[in-house]
Length: 335
Length: 63
View 1 (spheres, each protein chain N blue to C red):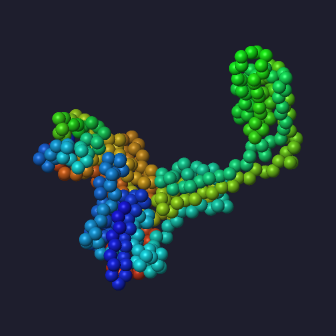
View 2 (cartoon, rainbow over the protein chains, first blue to last red; view 1 turned 180 degrees about the vertical axis):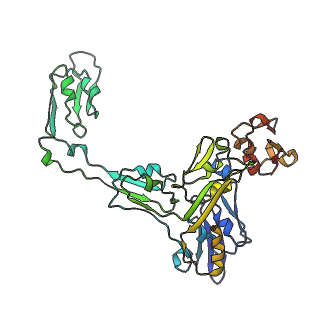
View 3 (cartoon, rainbow over the protein chains, first blue to last red; view 1 turned 120 degrees about the horizontal axis):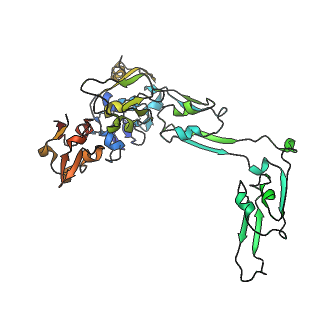
């Protein structure tokens, strides 16, 4: 993380957040004063070097803010008199989104597992088990010999037996309890009991009308800060409850030559830097799944063979009002 | 093709800002440590060029 700050007729401050940065280097590519530098991203991604992916030369940075609007992920922000220029309305902004439709979400949690950035915060409240079943169960202490067959076989683990050794066989020091928040009245305990000590009646089917339809509530939140719009969540969602807009449209592929070929498993630099979990090594070659790729281009910078070809045909960067900025920012695209 | 190391630019592992980054990066075991210096094991090299690209001293090149 770095901050470059200068006070004049207005106070300008550029903030970089390494936790958000995906090491794509777009900022360094567009910087008009070449003040930003992309570091050794492969050793950083592998944890061999601890440093920020982007470094700044604060002597040459003019705090224009171009880098901050060029970054699709919000890793750089320019504040003028305390206001982020992307919030002011005059500067370009990315028209990208990652949203969960709460009405459609069934809280299955698959998105949270699939997210390569751990950007999805997910919690759900399931109904209580005892509210979904009806029945009765009791164990006759007089008959029970505390053999433990029932407890060992009980599918939900609802039976608790304590066998405390005592000094004399005459002293009774055992106990058996059924936890009715766990019991589903399946009757296995009754069937296995060698002493017929268990009485169990299941009335779930008979009393179905009295049992409410189970309701599941919850929250699925995509952290905008960590999200890189890869769309893993949207693809894996079984009810299409997630809407993702990617920053770029385009293509990415391998262009091998006679001298330069993909070394696959020996290298896997592209895979290591990919923030989208979009690259797989298949039969010794890096294969990019464009469904999950956000075309950030970090893999292009990481490839030691320089055989990854990225084409960005359009971007969702809107509201570019200045001709000079338009020229700089269009460097992000290649026609 | 394999790679070669310019021993003057490389110095010793002790002097490397990352204490032998090339050794740590190469998963083929083609770069090893020998008496505090970096040594190439040509038969293990797969020509991926990761070491060339990432050497902080730019001491590695194609042989």
